[in-house]
Length: 557
RNA sequence: GGCAGCGUAGCUCAGUGGUAGAGCAGAGGACUCAUAAGCCUUUGGUCGUGGGUUCAAAUCCCUCCGCUGCCA
Image (cartoon, rainbow, N blue to C red):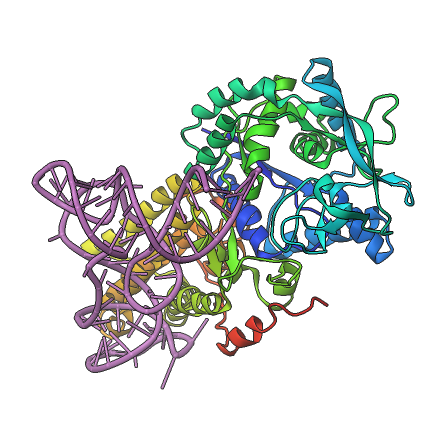
């Protein structure tokens, strides 16, 4: 029975390149999930886009003498390039800068306003008389009242890490012109989160299939009591507030960005030629929607976005929010400003995508933070991907190719050991089916690797390179069993390692896309002509460990 | 300060009531189809500390120590 699955992926902020933390946290998991479901024959829609609004982009633009739109477009292009090279298979990766997104955002804003879930109130905001504009919290600098650091910002102090209100800063000044700001009253709209408190709590308590960390965090937050939140700002970059007298204000980015999931689906429907098709993913109660995000984003996806959806009505709430924890680099927390990060475009300029996908999958921060180190990356590549899996593929294919005229041999009777290995291949398909369905990616890829390991043992025991000298049939049978396993591995590893799985599929003599072959054993028939095999993966020089590690912390070029 | 989480072999980690596990690293071995890959054997842990519950605790409860994150 075919299912319809909406895969909603966190919107990357278009003010800088992606790093491995982003990929491990929010981008690789949904891609694995999407490829798995597509192989199963399910109807998948995986959408996301660049988040183009918000203050950091305007700051970056001013620093570089460009417009915010130019910055956003530049990184959007880079994201698209990265998705393609890493194999992140979005059905649509759009931006929050489209007319469609503004339209959908305004519809939600106005509907919630109409229903009393959005209200107006006056707040005190910093205003720079020299720049003649309101300053968002990050635009105000001053001395930290807690640690005395002179470079604290209005939202928090980077030195001591304390968050604060702009009015707390000693000697506040405009970040751009150093003028002392005035605090002025300004009218803004607020989302009445308090109105959803009880409904949200009741809803969340039913989500027993959520990950423990997501459930804990959300429940605790709700039980502390929600506060209404401002959803408009005095800036000129963003979606304009669709109310007379508020033309100079913008919808606050956190309110508008989550709407992207819906607006992107609508954009996808329009371009597919059936404008109403979005409804099949948002209004059909049987459709499950999964939101893949990092743990820093939980609040927005388990509380704020569901509240907005409840207020709007007639749209599916999230089915699951499998938020990942963080990835650390060489034992330390990622830091963009200190360049303590491995940047994705940089990685992709020097290495293949599958080794990275392998490491981040088998070491995915699903339930706890995990660490990325170059030593571990090289080791996992050399000892596991190359030696266990790649070498299994290569030893089987090269031997068959040379000894059986490049064709899949005809097997004889299967003894109990051969049957057990074939049984394990079938079990792995079933087990991984269950694990992937529940978003247990790390455990899933580990069970695939166990199958490869077990098959290496099987080959050693059967020694077809020996038996071929006196019992060609026994040799053929053992190799045929191994080929059955290879075809199983190409399928179960496809969601994780799409490039090498497709290659293996072709080495086994198949044409077309492996994704179209279904989540099942697709053993090549005896006599099928194999492609001349090449190694699937390459060993990496251990010297790269020092070379790559020393790049960390450098000034970014 | 409040809340949450973590602490298991040299390293990275799995294991939530029933005889302490995997991979890597170390030691030894047989094999040779394969990218000097694969396979077998083996060394190594009082599961942070102290107490409690239980026939039985790495696992549940409490104390303390150390680390991390979130919040004030």
